[in-house]
Length: 377
Image (tube, rainbow, N blue to C red):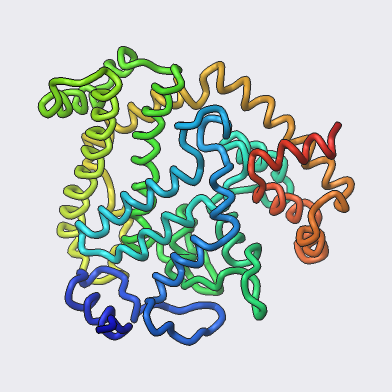
């Protein structure tokens, strides 16, 4: 027996909520394509991302710690996979479209530069007179223009829902493809956004401990960590210190995910959300931590900013790579022939600075280091 496309559509009708985005209600693709016999549109979008070069390059891009500095530290790829897994959990619990939330999660960091957020800030500074740089909008450029998979068009030709789901920050009356965007993304995109935040809260604590930048004694000052310790202690009274620590981080993440699910369900009900468009036209997202709990997560985020992201050891490394980004950008702008073949074909279309930015944003940490050595020494 084969599960046909029509069977999957019926499953969505019977199993998903009225406010979930259904495949049959998609606004479609920029370039029309025939339906696939076995995969829905959002499943096809997910697979196109997984098979893209940009996705594979995430393995060698920094999350927080410079790629290659530790075998167990997260990379941009492992972070993305964790975000996708948590997105599916939350979408399933709330009777939403799991495939759509997962797809947005898998695509959300495709536009990140090498060297993590330091690389992004450097690129934004370099492009301040040429439109700036934002990794969310760069992800759109990747899937719409920079991936080269089809003979008829540039990009991956993803659905409207995935593409607009990557636009997190929306100004008043913002337009996309000539259509006005509502103030909020639909709920599946909101899930991917919150999953991104809580995922890095959890795994950056894990990596920070592993790297020796923070200690459990330092974390004891945070209420959310003490809550996770208490939860872990109630279930794990024996084991090595490392084993208990790992289980505590697991409890921390599970606690955050559970809080979002329970509070978001209340938000959806209180806002009387009936259809996908209802949640998009609210003033606030419905997918969110409970307000008092959110204060605890903010305290954790501030702790990580002070003790991990901008600590002295990390700042020293970041300063070095930022200087390399500046030098490499200058070298390419002054001599575009140094860039790769495809990047050079885009010079007349988007201008030198944007072509350079597209090229550099796609680099892995390793390739950027090699290019710096080739072009700037």
